[in-house]
Length: 207
Image (cartoon, rainbow, N blue to C red):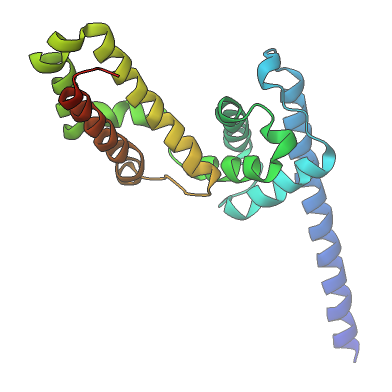
């Protein structure tokens, strides 16, 4: 009986300590996030979340953090602000109108390779190299429509990479390997743009 009573007391103490630690962890996260929010100078990407939204963001982040919130604090905060900038380009009011989608993007972004990885992978991708050759080095397109038109389509392809990356993260798709980025972001967009270029050459209008 005495042993059972001691076990019950120990269990209650452990739960109280756990709740206290969880509260401290959240307070540290909230404090760091709010401090950085106050330092944002670009009004176009101001993030003004209330306490409930910060708690929702924290609760969704916590399960995917393998070590501790303290060890990963800067990485987590960077992912949040990077997601803010990325989703803002897609929907300026995403935090206000679709906060859950923003949370999904931020959590997935934390788990994924940086978006800048696209710039490295595309350069070494053979399909991308073939696409550039078709635009700039094969006389067929550039001699017909000019350098500026080729350059415009090249830029559209680059923009499509980043738009697809952002959209996938909003859908909760984790892009944590080079292979996934190549398969889901780079190659599908190149094939689509390749088809568009071929259609333009067939049509002859450059539209």
